[in-house]
Length: 113
Length: 110
Image 1 (cartoon, each protein chain N blue to C red):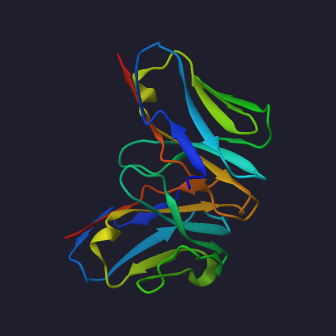
Image 2 (cartoon, chains in turn purple, green):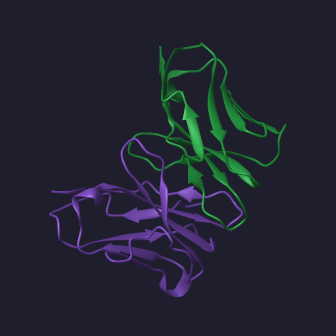
């Protein structure tokens, strides 16, 4: 079974620029999550989708972050404009449902200069 | 206030030296507690889910246990390949987010 795919693996941008990350979940997984993991911390949920609908985006900084999951399969997360404090690893995870264990991709490491 | 606290922050063991990692939580109405392993540059890898006090689960050299206030991850006779960061997370209900602790960085020295 193929795992959660994410790209790119690394991204370096300057502050105030924009960036986008892509995630393809495990086939058949209805629930998709985006997490932010700052060095030395556990992952923090940004947004949760159930199929193509948003379940929880309460911790998403909506003035600069946006995410979509058109067609209920793959998803993109965008940051515009980026700030220095956005430097982190952005992890995508998927699960069969909200009650099942989440399986993570290897993330995108974002560095803001 | 942190809902999930893991200790110690870092642990260094000799190969074969058994030990335990702790995850304490302050939430009420816990639906499930999850343990993950994370290697450098990788995403977290699912290990266990525990649902009720007294429950235990095992996988190779790892055993996870759960009480009403905390969970332990016991590592028996660890090997260098067990070196990783171990994360625990709690979930309050079926469709609520996982809340992660900061993790314990485990180093096993040959």
